[in-house]
Amino acid sequence: MKFIAGLAALVSVALAAPSRAPTPLDIKLEMVGNSAVKATVTNVGKNSLKLLKTGTFLDTSAVERVTVTSDAKKLDFDGIKLRIAIDSLTEDSFQRIGASESIEVTFDVAEVYDLSQGGIFKIASSGVISAAEEDDTKLVKSVPYWSNEVEADVNGEEASFARIAFHQKRVIVQDCTGTRGTVTTTALSNCASLARAASTAASSGSAAKIEEYFKSSSSSTRSTVSTVFSRVASECGSRTSGMSRYYCSDPYGACSSNVLAYTVPSASITAYCNLYFNNLPALTRTCHAQDQAGTNVHEMTHLTQIRGTSDYSGYGYNYVRSLTAAQNLNHADTYALFANAIYAGC
Image 1 (cartoon, rainbow, N blue to C red):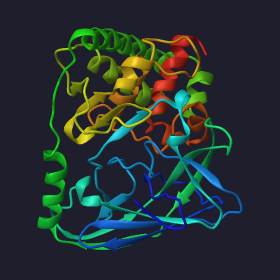
Image 2: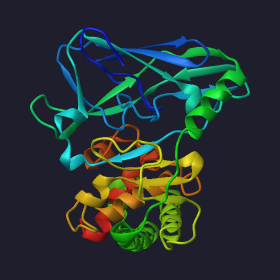
Image 3: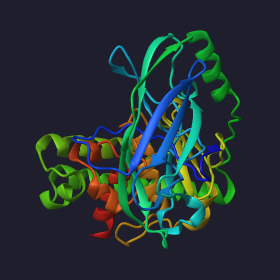
């Protein structure tokens, strides 16, 4: 990561916004070499920003930062989707950007998008990033952002090598045994129970409750949400079968500070970090709090076969409330928090 004026930031997940609200973030993208992108982020506002780093465009992990399109078709993201522990964030979880300060970050989109066909690709970034007040670590606000669109003329063979190298350098080890095996069995059982109850609530429960989290109680919204939870319940219903590979280790090296778990949808992998096993209760009756079962729900919705949800660089109830109805339907934490609300009676 290269610093300009001493601080850092970058670009992020693609999140379509209905209108461009005023924002203090100015993001400029430019191509470097075959498929690398350099993002220069400037705080053009009057106040310093304290932005969430873990799981967002500021993270060094292979998280979703941009959208890539070819012939007007959006390419599938092939990297890592995280869940973070929002109640135990530290100063290291944030990046400060002072007024008028800028930073540069460079990343290779060929690692996490299939550009092997070569040719012209269009790359851009937009979304919302969670933020905290200067003297606190609680996520209390959101900052929108969007970038310019750049056009890349990609050599497909070179891009293919970059993608293969990224995925093949990982060593996959399944080790859900011993104490972690016991935790896993309980978590999957609880996940299935949460999802079944949430599926019922979505299909025929309170209109006000589903509107609180998904901004709509229409028949189509109810059907979509109920179906997602039914699929989650099925996936969590067994330790020995399912669509995904389940790891109690860190095969992609993404379990950094505050990361509870992550999913690699393209490989149908979910992985659970030390923080998940050591810091979370199995279940909680506290509204909007995190537990192991809810984390499983969150990660399962990331799987392409279930919903293929995104994180949009945002977590927690306040962030969920800031999204549009369409965004909520594709946001992993919205599903996890709705399931928690049904279980806890929020």
